[in-house]
View (tube, rainbow, N blue to C red):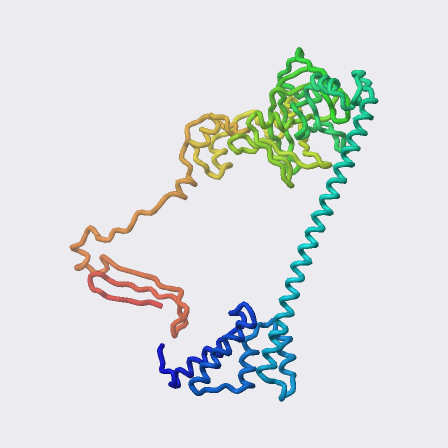
Length: 432
């Protein structure tokens, strides 16, 4: 807003400008002091002179926090030395000193970086020379080494490529399972290092082709084993907690008598559209639709399933289900199953969907309990048939209602009330 040069409002504007000067708004202390002097001169020209001590306080108030040490030293000066000239002189000297320190620090950092670069280059060159000498020495030593397998120079038998290729052709299957303290009888282990399913007992096989033989199966302990056949395995897994059994079947399983435990290959399970999940609870095997097929618990850092051959497990399964020699009536099974629909029971018996449901095939008969439980009363007629006589004959049509119990009893300490209304005479009787 424009104001005349000699007005009070102009004085207010210049005073605001003087008090708003901050060192952070300027690059150097010299520029900061120059702007303050300019504002003070404008105030003097309109007759508003600033006292020397007040001007010194304005200058110190505009400094940033990193100048607090200098401000404290200036405020401790004697009264006769605390002048505007002294403050400006010391501020300019301190600003000059700080700028010199910054420049010297940058120069020192530049020389340090250059020294590090030269040192790093020298070290790299030294390492290259040492590696070159080491490589030359190794070549000279290799030229004197003879391989005991192929009789050629330049390598040892452990690194002989001819020996490695020969072993690779002979070894077809591999088992990563190694010995542990678990009991291996009727035990299968989920093995991510095995290339095929392997069984140690022929009794696990439902079908087997003994003409299929594979030599050179490498075991984890370094031994070599041979297969005695190949086929399908049928067994059951017994749960440790509930004792229930779950059937499982694997195809293309190798019979290897030299192994102690059965092995399920994770690779072959995945090839057969199975999903294998390992976590802290155990190993879980699902089909492609997400149904759980098998579960293995962790034992001695291995994922183990306890099984039995299918032929033996049939005896266990039959012992779990009571087989009656005679069929029982449909009514008896209807009551056993909490009055389930008799038609549904017959459907389950005909489809053999429930083991042990030996129900006689008979026509369903009505159940008295079901009829009583599902029966309902007929509603009362809202309009009597003899609508002519109801208003002419007393007690032909009577309305009654019972209310209670009432929280607050009557004066006679009664909590129920019976109302009786005659439709013809409209006589009302209330009984407590």
